[in-house]
Image (tube, rainbow, N blue to C red; front, side, top):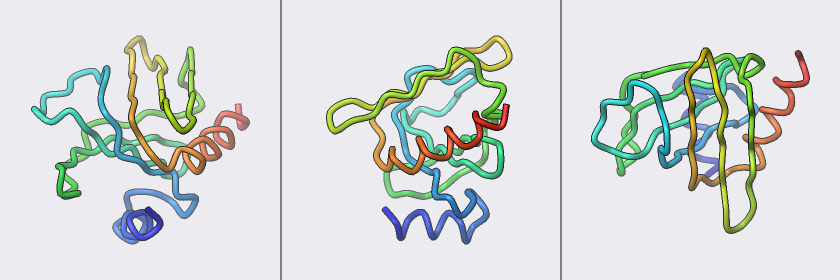
Length: 115
């Protein structure tokens, strides 16, 4: 995973903190892709969403949210279950089945503490 995060950082998708994962989409407003996965990348104070395929080819950015403005924020992650859920500007976002959750959780904590 570290090599993949290094590639994402070099490509400008995420910052050096390594808050980046591929996740299964449960709810993503205006999602039009037929694939049920998305790349979540934290860069500065934003969580950005990118199209990605099963070969790790990254497509276009489809959305971005300011982490500190997310409401009803839920982040649960352990060996068996991963869940990221929040509301942003009246829309619900929800993702599951992702790795690298420790780095992502740390980055979210840092950004939400800035409130």
